[in-house]
Image (cartoon, rainbow, N blue to C red):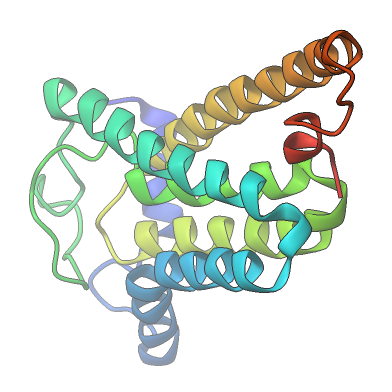
Length: 194
């Protein structure tokens, strides 16, 4: 195990004698942070009509991110801190591999995708803070190492980067396609930033 990862874990994690109110807050965030992220995505889908297609794509990419994260974690089977006996698990969790953190990957993907869209950037900043806080909480609760969270962030960055490249390709291709067909507002507006 990487010494820096282990040192960071011991610095962040609750350990054997956590502060009760911090543990309560961290446990709630570790369990419900991803649900709050999903609720914000659904609320944005409901309220931001101009961004609905983009937000549906983001939701689909969140699902893809979850699948990719699990596909990476399964063969790696990196043990979690509580499995190694380094800290108690303060929230209920299975002992399967935790690298990368799927919670972190999906939440950071949604945050980064919101940050890519001008009309959604303020929400994106809030989602980024929520993802970081949830990552901290999952380390504090003993179910992840810091490296698991960082790996989730990196995976999210790669997938968000692919989304940004796809968006640019659509922007570049659609005006030409629109000129050829005489309809300039076809699918180009689906990706156009709000």
